[in-house]
Image (cartoon, rainbow, N blue to C red; front, side, top):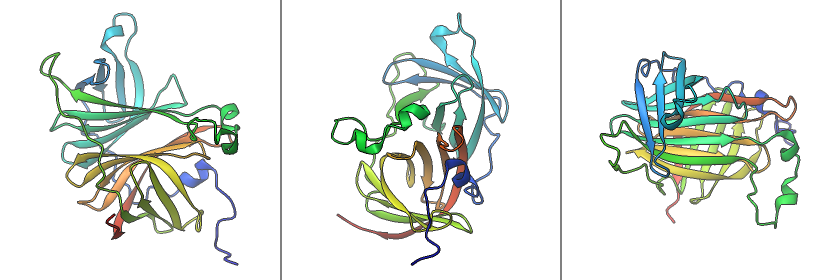
Length: 274
């Protein structure tokens, strides 16, 4: 018997401790910037004002006369020149987070809005959802593409495309000296994670995921877990061999919504060509 094997799936708050030893530092480089985001899918326009390195204002232009901008506490991480990961949990909705990849040089943004269900919904078992034609993950995620500061109301711009360039890769991620995982990117819908070292050592699972290409060798990767109420999104930089992003979910033991940023050093272990 392997005595080092994890005895249980640990709570999210406990799991998040120690996932940031190799995270890039928070960036204040967006402070003072005002961005206009026009979403391709709906033509909605959002005003985003970075007051300083920790506070931003966010709201739809169409409703500004009736509703002031909401103030949010955010964290930004500079992934590469003019490419930032920005993340916050809505003050008015503790179960909803907004995560953005901002490509300022090419004026492109991709925005993930994730909603974590309440504890009552979560208690519907995974088995109860099987065979009913419903999403096996209870987490709802909206993915939207935007033009940053469009020159005209009708300007169109290429969006960050979905990509298959990660598929077949097996990458080891070292979050701290005692937190090491590997990912195997199986296809355009699923990946497998496996804990090599840490509280979950020996555990593994296969989850839903999405991939987008942000720049050469820089990818946005997101996942939704089907059993634990957890959503994650990271920017993987294969030029610098590191990843940075966040995990958001419901801690089952405490009932609290937990959101934390994390980062790792990356190592390509092998690649399978299908």
